[in-house]
Image 1 (cartoon, rainbow, N blue to C red):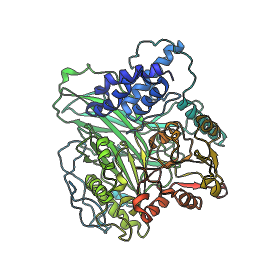
Image 2: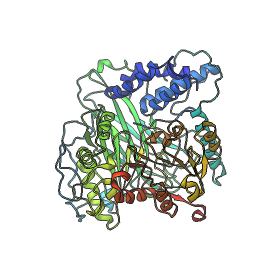
Image 3: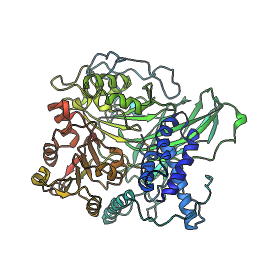
Image 4: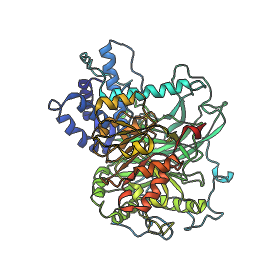
Length: 622
């Protein structure tokens, strides 16, 4: 990756932020400007890598960024074919992303508060009645009741050619990412079956719509273009696919969710959804259509499409060329068991505004998104919470007060359904800054343990927004081999207890380890190489960090799960963690119980991965 081309493309993104991200552009601009100011004063390679990882967190900006880089590559190589949209470059990760109220009766949740739907920031919640706390009576809609699940079936301009770049060789991140991708490809090639058909979200909508005028949108599935892939149905058996739409600034008279039947007779179905853009104050407003794909309560795909809303028909035809659909591919087969509750959190059109939707295999959830307005940028809110780390109860209450009422009501209903076991909760979030898992329940399910969500329930979170990491999070990964990255002369306890391979935190040694990466990689405190190299790690490896670091970077490159503290702790829980995981316990459950035993320290540890993920040993997989 040419650092000169990266910085040139980043400056183009900086100039186009308002059209790419609308009112949400300020956060990326504030983070990008200091990096651009360092050009000429810092080493170009590391600076370009930092720029790439920043822009990768913002979907529409990332899609434009990769298009610019691909155009530069083709101009450099003398190619004349236009770049294909929707494909990531060889060395580039896909985007990641990113007063207390009294709580209602029952085990969990803040007090009822005004909530809004995506069609209006001021309208009240229109969710159907939820059951009283602890009750799951016959009036509560269930997924196993057919009556309640019958849902309605219903060219970019190229930048100027860049001068040919000198052959600098692959960057560190490129080498790391390439090594792990080669391992993934080799693993796929060894599989007995042929390549699985790829399928992506379909969101067809006019690039410009006029406020107050009905617009039709086609949503469904679109085939991928994979050489050698079979021209067959992406689902070997017929499956019902639910597509949940979140679109701020629109009204959907027919509802925000459709159900499609996927099978050999209709491998790529689609449905029409009517949208009404609401009146607005600005002549042109950038909006987004976000589509969440769900199979039996499990989120298996996500797509987002940008468009412009105009206040007058006279402005039609003045906006930019069509934008591609960003997001993950949609997985229909072997999606695994879903979490009991999945909360999907996406950005709104203003900084600090988030929209929450919910999925569960136990109940039919409302199709309207609920609003969460933090009153500030999510990054600033996260920094303020970090300042409260010495008082976890205050932090937990503040987080709980911002979570929409619908989440607590669904969690309460599910907890009553699955008792006596603990409910599992998966948080899929575009924003990486808020530790939602530390929300405090006023009336916990189990009063004998701390009342935080990640103690009362088995929790995991996962980034949302780009082509990687894919959905759903893996529910199984290898647990046989381990490497420990650390310095010093003493023998690390994990080497003695688990036969882990010692790896020096020297760049060359870590790169050599990636030639045959282990199932588990542990970075000790003081291994400063961990955060820099994590941007290129993955291929299914499970990663444990003893110091705070950028967990999303590991996941973007393919890690199956990541454990890291939100703030420095150093309590030495790793040996007990690995002992229990090696015995078959899911990492999310191990961390939950350890938090209950030592809440002052273990509560700092955040888990990125599926709540049901297990580290499987070879003999158990045989």
